[in-house]
Length: 239
Image (cartoon, rainbow, N blue to C red):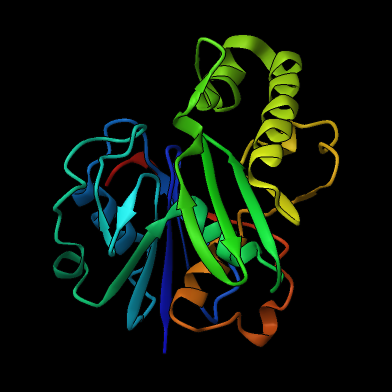
């Protein structure tokens, strides 16, 4: 079975087909609609044949359906007919949960924190993934996401942002009491060092999580989860 994994983010939409070794991407942004996302995915995967889709969605998902529009994208995501638009079966999971599933090592309770456009959070407990929305909980005068997401990084600078990340990790670790803590997301590379008892995640694990949603593992030539070079097929936003 060929699975197309789609990682929808506030900055890019990234895709990978199991059996391929190079993800592809295009720009997203605050005005991208689900229809534009579908057209963009179809445009950069014209030469790929797939049977099913696994999609990581940057907002809450319930029973395979988005229940809120993404904070960092356009409108119209709730109630959109994804299977009809793509023409094949699709499984949808919160994007942090999909990356968490791909980061899990097989036992215990793992907390995943994704430092990206926002703050993605999920827990995997003995193989069961539980999406969380911890990033929107109150923190200082705003929310966790406002301080450790991209807005906080741009507003306060790297030095202050790193201190806030360390504080948020400490607070959430104390609350969840995990056996394992994984820091992922595109901005994790901006940390000088990881907080205590954390390990480095990899955005590529989002694809592995998508394949695992359909009980498919990486192809033999992709045993390593080290992120390969991503092919940027086009630079325009949306379509």
